Length: 107
Length: 121
Image (cartoon, rainbow over all chains, first blue to last red; front, side):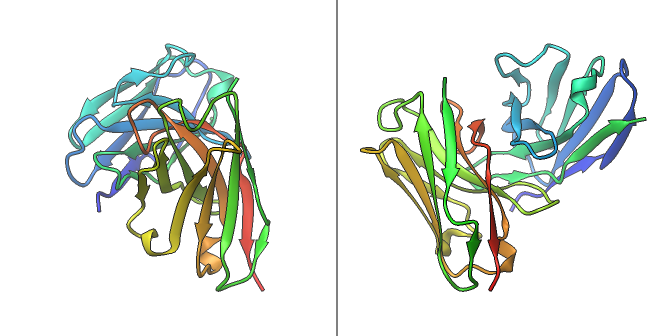
């Protein structure tokens, strides 16, 4: 199994901050990585797929980068609607796995 | 507009079978060319992909659950279903159905609202 880790587990930030979340895989997943946002009591929302492809309708302040074993999700200027938990998902094969999540809360 | 809605019992006894249905509106599961699937999330924990099915019927399963899981399509009702056998308390979770993104069996682009299933006697 490919294991996924995310850092930090919690990130405290203010509106307007630049926020970066890191996701690491235990072996290369090439660019087969997705990012989701989840708010309490809600279903996750897909933000990015194939490491850097922004889903239609997702604000351009979200961006993804990386390949192989290290990936980042960046929010260029944090907005009030962005306080949430973020998960990465590797899908190098259908034996996909999610990271444990990073909670972005109010500083 | 695509909508997915999960339905099924909210309480299942240990060792019994969990059965859920996802009703789809705004798209045809038999002709749209997408994969459909299930993901779950234990209370307060992370996400786990369970299974996916292609509109032509090819199935994909999480290896850790494969021996207990069946996913199927009911094209006449535009629904797809999940069955999980021999459940234990560890199967307590919010279960989401989803339509995966084009070309992927596992990346969920559209999600249902989710349904909480509790395994308890």
